[in-house]
Length: 265
Image 1 (cartoon, rainbow, N blue to C red):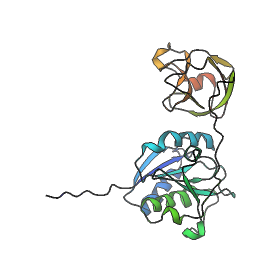
Image 2: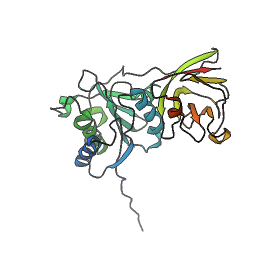
Image 3: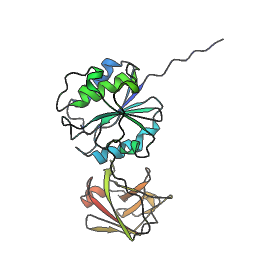
Image 4: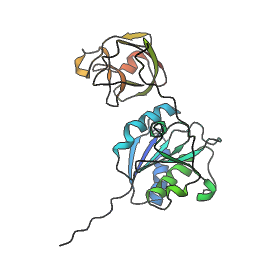
């Protein structure tokens, strides 16, 4: 007896700052399904803070490699829409990324192993684009075409050697302190910074200062602290995180994405 296996449907993920109040995300999904009806659509998030390229980059960093080879990640955090900024398709580890060239793919591009091409609109037959909604008119349909094998990576456009990559800070323990920024606030109000930490806890850091408050207790997990206590730790993504035990640190401190955090060793 012989067995047959069907090719799994292509996976397309969506990461945007569009929110879910309006029709924007639904229209992008409609575009994808019209071109690639068998696609499996995954909403990573549509709650990236508005125009926060750094916040979008953090989300991409945390999620992209967990998806199977062949996945197409459509990422639209695009404050420069309609301007002269380039549009990209990036290939890394058999995954594809369709996004504006504004640093939102920094985590994918940073180590230099990814291949990168600029989208040639005329070569791909994209004639009319809205000046304000490239998610609908470019990124979603091109992502669908790639997912269904109707457009190959090599046909997207010319090679790009200098994509935009945001600066990335590493811990420097030769310094007595270091400044980083908030890149994400999660559903629980945990304040996540751009600074990676080594090991299983934040104990290499002596204290953290943000929002006019000093957080002095480092823990290895949330329950190690007391109810309502502010703590810092190495979060699931490997970066320094400030949390309020059984509470919302962001609301308590009035901290949001982009704000300054000083780390003292």
